[in-house]
Amino acid sequence: MFNEKLKLVPHLPGSYQMRNKDNKIIYVGKAKDLHRRVSSYFNRVHTGKTAKMVSEVADFTYIIANTETEAFVLELNLIKEYNPKYNILLKDDKSYPYIEYIAKPYPRLKVSRYLQIKKKDHKQLFGPYPNAYAARRIVNLINRLYPLKKCENLGKSLCLYYHIGECLGYCEKNIDQDKVNEMENDILSFLRGNDSILKNKIMDKINEYSNSLNFELAQELKEELQYINYILDKQKVELTDLVNRDVIGYYYDKGFISIEIFFLRNGKLIGSHNDIFPLVGEVKDELDYYIMNFYNTHEHPKEILIPDSIDASVLSELLEIKFNIPIRGQKKKLLDMVNLNAKNNLNNKLELVLKDEEKTVNANEELKEILGLDILDRIDLFDNSNLFGNYAVSGMVVYKSGKPAKNEYRKYKVTVDKNDDFNTMKEVIYRRYYRALVDKTEMPDLIIVDGGINQINACKLSLEELNLNIKVCGLRKNDKHRTNDLLDGDTYNEIKIDRDSNVFHYLTRMQDEVHRYTINYHRQIRSKGSIASILDEIDGIGPARKKELIKQFGSVVKMKEASIEDLTKIIPEQVAINLKNYLDNMKK
Image (cartoon, rainbow, N blue to C red):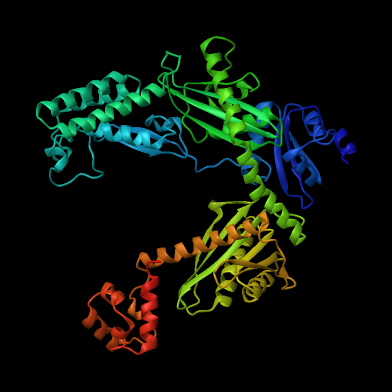
């Protein structure tokens, strides 16, 4: 297929880009030898995700680099720019909590999450803690044992924490600095690995409470001590050098890779992280990319132990972290244990991962075939919501390769001020894709509107005005408000789909998601007071009737509790029904 072009690819380092028939980049990779790596996709048989990617390749391009490190940086930048569908999509929202000590202006301890951690920040962070509950419980316990600053802002007078001995009275700014220094030394010593500090402090408090016959508080602290002992016992490992290090292992089988990371802080195992995903490129390249991205959003330990199949030199240069490949001894045993955990996780979770692929990625592929589309990487779904035609809003959710892309969701306040789904949909579609054209952002391969022919026509009119040719479908619900029919936007015919199929369940999940997102936005607007006056929004209630209703019931709560008969003593029956329905829907 590409024999002549492949002959021209040099035996040099660089980045290569696989493109589909629309010239869209679907995969980016790097190679020490471009000719050998690119040729490998077309001169051998592949399975799984790699086979699927190769089947979509209509062309390839490449960029030569001077070194493998330059090729890696180029790969990272291209993936970030084009977000190719077959590259690993790391979950940016997976941030682990850290315990953060803040010294100035007043000593505080809290649980923090950071999506971007940089060395120059000089934050005193301890972690990460994959067990967020453990992090919060430790912070609460330390705050209870030591008189740290508890509140966010300084008060005008001393609060309860001062009077019960859990604060030094920072509001008055007359603090014993020696006490602060002693307290800080204790806390930091514990967080750096000296367990006896906290254990002794708890025992002192238990004895103090027991001697004062406060047995309830003594029992609470005894339970806390048992929890601390349990946590510390789980963290025992055979390394005793107290170095902050991570250990990375992996296992590859049946087209999937499991990556395991152990977090060791001050010689203790505080938790682990595992990811399982299908592979397209070489194992080594995918590992490099994964590790690089992981440590762009997580704390850098002093040392990372890795298997010999990973290129330590390139990662060390780019991340400025010391990567070591243990050959023997306790570090090698620890690495073997991490690899074993990666293997066990893959064996235990692979069936679930495959089922998830079937329900998402495979269902998306089936929908593509049903609709006769060449490409179905992105679906935009729209839903409208209003209450008696007032405060119309619309929501858009996005699915990429079968899975929700929540960072792409959008909310719209609509200028239409009456119950008009047609013009609401028309306005939102125009605004959404006019902005996409201006900003040159990604367009969908399919638009699904929540509704029937009316909403489809509104969508198509806006697309025609923008000179866009995008496939449109409609999802109709039955009288029980459940997904019922998929309508083809070209023929207006119902597309027959088996109710028990993955595709039907996939459509149902998407419709439920866009409905949930839009309704929540509508509730949010109402709860924030966007409705200036409830009574002003009901047709038939003028100043005189409004005054009488307020005089009679006094509050919205009492109006809501009133019956239709009670309301009709002041306003006409239909107006009373509308008001009652409006009030009943406010908290839904």
